[in-house]
Image (cartoon, rainbow, N blue to C red; front, top):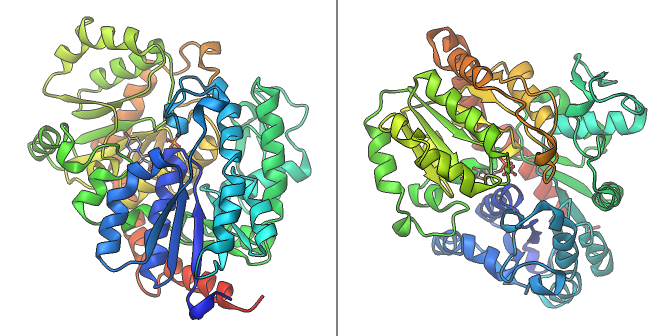
Length: 488
Ligand code: UDP
């Protein structure tokens, strides 16, 4: 039990937008329930959400920031590279995780002396060394895995049954032990079940999964109404110590919070913002497709061009977030000198760099979202009540596509057949054509998509209701806090 009858949690996010952003949201939601929260991260990452935290503190929330130096250059990383989205190459992933491991001892010392004594450390699954810190400090480790319940259940059932082992990439795998039939190609399964070329990364993954098993419990960014069968299964599997408290991004209600979420710049210095908002304001309701493939995408220029041609051929207004393309200069040349930008001028709004995604998704003119099915983006599309075009790329994104397309019926797939491991994009040429993109966009944005749009709207309402008093996510958070307040 924490001192002063006041619960205090230490939150340690993985330094990567898709893991960091929901943890910052979680910090604000927890603090909003009257507990104290300390977010532990490195200086460059703290700079990305410092102003959000300051605003939360001014509004009366007890959130603190504790920064630990990240030794980038000692591990062969560029100076100041403290986030996975800043890695010059995904071949440096292990260097990054090893550098992150040096936070272990300073974190342990901090937990020893901080007051009130923490009731638990809520840490990202991929920071497996936090298990040892929690054990040595005598406090529980609660996992924040950042993935859906469906992903956890499917992964667990396959790891136990080994139903996928020995199959070829194109073979169909039926996930055993599920209430409904879910099928995938072996080549669509996440890395733990379908390893890439780097054996070190696979070994690290296996260790991470093994250490996750020993955690006290798990906080999941999802809501009951979205994937109730899988919420139930995961809770049963983990003896009830699973708390579904999402969608976390819905805590961003103020425009400034939405604009600054994940951005390195303050809202005032965001040069896209005014032109973007006035362009969106000039568009008809539900007419614009928002296109973003997440924070880590490194698709090759040939593949990005097919996406561009497909958007052009769709004839719809669109916002396209272009960031981190592999061989970015070649792609830029195509956009500028190749005449693309000129051809779509007025109809296509290109954002280079970081987009205020949750703000854009909430605009009345946006009527669809072409997403790579990162779990955060999937939830953000669902929360905004939008139908989606799904193009899963890597990690567990094919599982997320199932939640959107098959389970919720709010999306149309572009038809991706294989997972492209981060860093292995060069091994694959064009897997999705301009026609695949155009056809899926058409299905989502035309009048026939009205039924799906209606369903998406209702799902969005359900998401918002989950977070208000007595909603399922609100109640799960209450149960989590009650559990943590018990004497060990
Ligand atoms: N995001 C954003 N602007 C961008 C790119 C990404 O705000 O230009 C946010 C997005 O809203 C989401 C997160 O970054 O919260 C990406 O996480 P996700 O799980 O969707 O995908 P990942 O980037 O991990 O592949």
